[in-house]
Figure 1 (cartoon, rainbow, N blue to C red):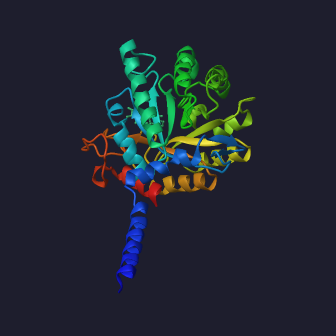
Figure 2 (figure 1 turned 135 degrees about the vertical axis):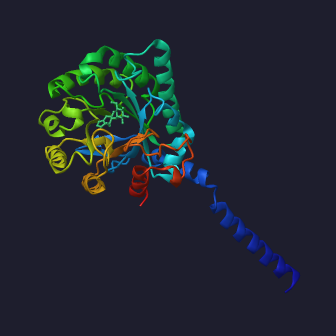
Figure 3 (figure 1 turned 90 degrees about the vertical axis):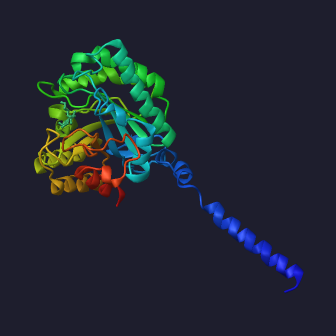
Length: 339
Ligand code: IDC
């Protein structure tokens, strides 16, 4: 080959190789350029559906922290853990759950602990923003039964977090996890009508409202939804070994009546968070929710020795989990989210 031709072929090969290698990015960099939030932006409600910035139906597939007021919850709320969830578990949403009345809950603890709880929420929101995943700030009403009990504290809490994070595209607000006991839909609505306008001063993002009987009665909420507010969703929670066909019917009824439903908490175990798994029932639930484009979030990222924990009790890592760190529930979930 003449020198000139040889030179040409050499340059051609070099440019081909350069082309190939410029397409091979470091996995982290690729993930960052295509994060769920970059792709889907600010979410909204259209009819019964959660939609993305292009108005297309969009499903959140998430994991919830355990209570950040407990040491089985708080340590797992960190960027490294959330990155593993995004990159290896197929998760696009993290729920940061802060109990209000149970042990060390926001409304029953001292000022220093309250500051620490706010700091943990900040870690979750900051990490989620950086990683481009959605984050739900959850006011975890449980032992307190009615959200009316700490309405004053809730108003002040949501003012703080909405002011701080309300402009972020990736933040959702869940204003009462599971009203129960005597808390009627009327009580919940009265609470929601007090808290929603405060959030709306700073944010147009999705607000999730709990429903009566531990967030099971979406059919009841559907009969009388909250008026004059946009981007409101109503939550149904299920623990598949306890809640079966009749509870799935409630979801169908609610959606048929036009209610935008989201599932911010579920597991395949019993409602106690423990006991047996029923993966057949759990699969039926996810199939139903998929068919209706309903988002779901699994309880919980913890190594507590209970069935709902996604990590084994022996897992001492707080991030960078591998398959061997996952409980039976964790393995099942990752399979659902990644296949
Ligand atoms: C459970 C935790 C458990 C904790 C308990 C406190 O898994 O470790 O001791 O709360 O009462 C819910 C609640 C959620 C529960 C979960 C399992 O929203 O807080 O977590 N559950 O019982 N609703 C139905 C089930």
